[in-house]
Length: 405
Image (cartoon, rainbow, N blue to C red):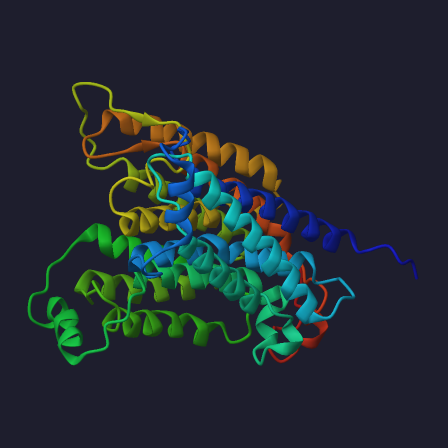
């Protein structure tokens, strides 16, 4: 047999390297924005301020943001070294050393950005994010749930996790009985109907159901998702369990079950079309025009860094989910991923441009860039890297082959 690597595996590794480059650039952008530099009045005092902090806790939002910013770097750094013959502790040390050095350089650069506050504590929390990322990317053989890293499960579980994130954001636990009672009031005592909420819940869950189709226990997976979301809503700060959301989940489960009776091609076509229509429709509400053009944010992620970071992050994750669903479903029909990313990006850019005429909307270039991370991730979601369980070992989890559609 030839020693050449499998072409799909080589493509997956190229995807890892490209994603790493993208995440490095995003970390720099998030740290140095708004990219306006000036020499500090006293370089020595600025350095002392950065290195000598009275407290390393700079607020929940800042700490979570610094951890989240470097968690992908930890995941991708570990994957890049996954084929290395070095021992695991040395690989971890290399990722931590490189990431810590990069985080420190970014803080030094912040000294020369008047709008930013350079702090050694940010380096510490960035390093925590690196360690968390490596734990998440640990070799499948060392994880009790090793089967979850197998190729047939990666794609549906990625969308299931993203869907749960949208339902339970901001993921801040509120473990008290009073919060549970308050979260149930909109469902039991003060029901209010919002068609948009119900449709969003139904269509999004139905799309996840389409991607769960290859799994043998797909019905259990599909029923488990709304149950997990309901429990999460009751235990997460700022969330409530409402009638529209509950009805939407029920309709979504039924719609997915009906879609499983269709051919895979028909179901994927209908799902992609519905996702694109809803993704476009929801962003053009309230279908009223301004008297003048609004501002368009051409700098990526500039709008995300203004206003509520939590609300903006949720909006970004929402865009990522719907665009990913369109791209993945159409790609399953044989369309080229690069062509889909380009077309979906241009469509999103056109939609964002129309938002300059809509009241209460913020036109931003960032959503038009989101199809490209999906294009980069597709090789990782569709092929097993070294150390992952192969398809042949999942006979108890995946349906045996059937007749080709």
